[in-house]
Length: 413
Image (cartoon, rainbow, N blue to C red):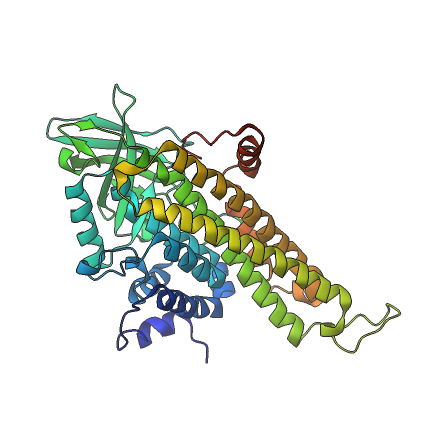
């Protein structure tokens, strides 16, 4: 029997059960969460209520601490598993899959650039409390201004997008230290007077990601909280540039999850309601016997399986780098992972959009009813896949194939 998000929170189905102990069990847990989310995904998308309940579901299920250290109560799992979990959750609700994926990246951000002391403190804080992360980091906007005030720094500015921050416990801020070209990251409590959300996220898809704008006013952080800084100096590592390929693969995996969800919903509709076409000269008794329907689903499933396998392979590659000693990462290792992820990103974009479009041809005219909600999958895939032009991902793969060039680290590669 299916239950809704609010019913799952009230029933607390995981309280009496042991936490998952293996990657396979964590993926099963994600499948359970996805099934709950899928029950009323269309209705929640239309209502566009701030997803406090959905985030609580992620907390109650333990998924928010999947990457957290075991000694603090975390799952101690790898990024390879995290990517699979993101995909599963997104198959139930693309918005919540995105929120979880961004949370994982921001929870890992302290490992990317922080000191050992900062890593220990942040991971204990968020894992012990099952805190949820958001981030006010959008490279296309002007950076927040960071002013050195002696023992503290002061963040000020505005960001157009701040995914998840409104429903988060902790927010990652990023800004430019005044008078320099030095970027500063810091993790701050979300609930404070200096962080004001604009409540202006009203886009075509991914409507429950709370990705609207934010204004930061006089948010003060001790220099000790500036990630990676020692005596106001930052020493960069190649490892720190893994943030972009890591999150690009987050994107690809929730695109694949959206495609999975669309295919699952469409095939269920076809089995239950789609009628065979009676005017083709080779008339069939049921839609399941129609050659063009079988051909269509076969094409979509084959392409999705192929993209998922490439995503799994790329996920294993970058996961190994993310969990290895930070000082050992080379530019070549980083570049190879980035180009493989660029390949996944383009395939995931293509198949998620194709599924979102073709399922209407395979379900029939009556499936366009608003109550069916098949438009959700195309809207979600179309909205986020415009995050950065997929053509540049194809160019990166082309430059690697033809010229042997690996992508240079940037805010988008």
